[in-house]
Length: 165
Image 1 (tube, helix red, strand yellow):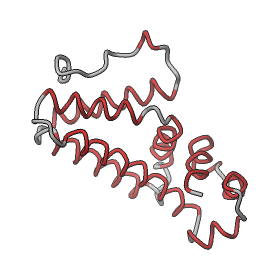
Image 2: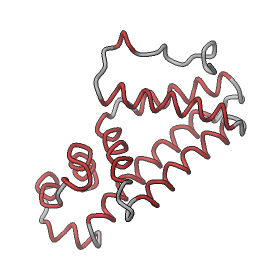
Image 3: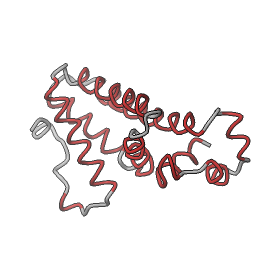
Image 4: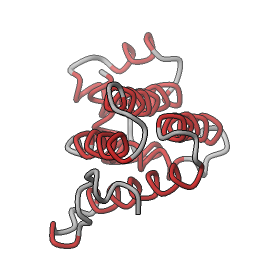
């Protein structure tokens, strides 16, 4: 059901996504959704948190076994690029940022983003500017992926040579 919800919310956003459509996608009844989640908001945030956790795990795994510096930054960049291959999860993340205009959703979306940013900063050695550059590049990649921008307009993949601008 979470997979169906990720697809629905990624395509239609929080407000236009429907639990009826999620139930159809998942092959379950709509009441079953409410047996598992008290409301649409809780389901949406569970999907968003899952995405944030996948990002955090990918970065931690990529950093494991590398020394801080260019090699770690490149490994984390490669891990993020691999996550971008799941466009549906990326679209859900972007929809969550857009849904943060809703005061009921904003605190949870903000907290998930902050946790990812804190992990980036910690894993890269604590430098706020380096973490901001890494996250900024990631946001650019998000937009390039979401808009299906042609490859020739993409920046070079991170490597040990170009890991830190």
